[in-house]
Figure 1 (tube, rainbow, N blue to C red):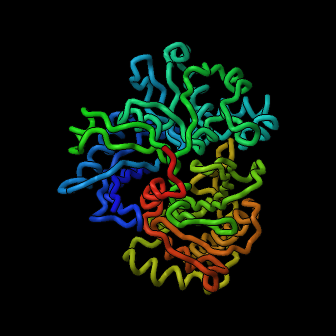
Figure 2 (tube, helix red, strand yellow):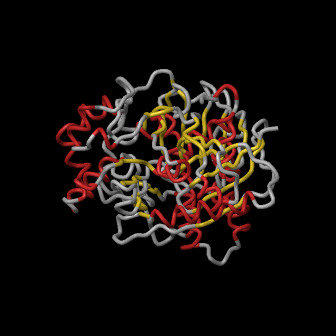
Length: 437
């Protein structure tokens, strides 16, 4: 029975567990170590590298305490999250996460100069935070000396892999959201975009399948984690892809991730770039995925509950009030719906309630929000480009059961809940069909 340490690095916490590879199930409690993002400006969302590493090691130590045997380590990770290293492999700046929007000036410039070419080859618009080379360009514009100091360009899982093994790499899914990779051309680092963004190709490590064994656990880190040295470490890939691995998704299936916003993803054999979605490689194997977003998600529900329904318990709000708000018709409209912004837009987006009157009450506002959630769910399905009929629908994330009840069409569909999907998907990196050494 093969057992692995799975590390799931999210945007506010790291989960860790010992997983049985055959079933993907935890062999004990799931450990969690939280960390905070810093916001030195309103658009910033960064974390110090050492703080992230401390959360990873804390979660890992909790998970392996008392473990008798362990065969390997694997990861899933927030994507993208830019890590720039100097010649001694020391982080030069805090890690800019995908929530960071300080690179809007760089994104505007790239879209104006080379937008159609960028979309057609990289597979995505130059999205601030969503494409890491824009963060790099913005940092270099603010710190001109930085460009000379950078000797390695990585994302968070690649940097964590370096910490664990001493080896550097990108998985294919992360490479697609650097802005430096030919996602829909030759699936290799692009001389065109390296030149355009003034990134030295020597700073970019090899691109490998996420199920490839990156290297062996270094003795010093093994001691820190309480593990034997020499354990094989797999790089893994993005958290969305990892959840798809956990679900065992096939062509014709839909993954619906419930979080601050809602993410819809599907496998595709025909990657087609579009401004309305993200197109990238799956990260494991040669497959591609399309990813769309519904901006009305958990953050919007939390906001309206805190603003208008503080007198209600969480159970009362989610079990009773939400259901009641779906029944009465309301003339109030939430449009645009971007209470938490829009991950697929370059410019800042905002939300607005319309058709308010003196008779409007809090249930009207909640009903308008739920109507907007359903409307933009349908728009996200359209943007996904896969039709609206799926073989299976896999739901994962906090609040997934609540969203299942809110989405039209889900009541009669083949919907399967996937608990801790991005964590459990790490086990699939070691399954025979995804294994690569």
